[in-house]
Length: 189
Image 1 (cartoon, rainbow, N blue to C red):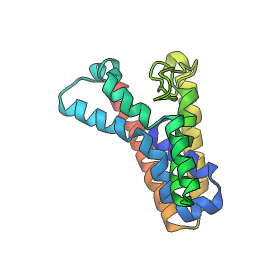
Image 2: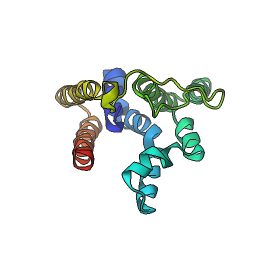
Image 3: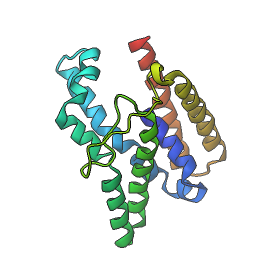
């Protein structure tokens, strides 16, 4: 899924009480797993790499993959959730649970760019027959479903939400999401 889509989906999944009281924690937890990818992309552009070089070669270097995998690791995120629960830190538990849900949705939607979701225990990858972006693996269909889910879900959250942090967060996420779509259209046609 595109990064901002995770925030909308997670807000929808965590329920009204949690999203009204802790929208910021849910949003940050939903976005954080992809932060290393944003940092990777920015440094690659700063180094003057072309898009093709970035996404066909640099993205797959071992160091970057290890960092991406750390933030998408079921064992590590599960352990973080367990530790937060054991220490009776409900906000940390919510934060790590939001990261975990992000990874759960990434698992079936990545083909060639699949993460090692069981890192560091295993380097196995699930190369899904479905991709959230690649047209060779139903990316147009998945992208349309994602677009509808984010826009409809975001509109519903804006209409039914009461907390200012929730409404502001959803508005910002929708703006980021639509800006990302515009960027992708300009970049790749």
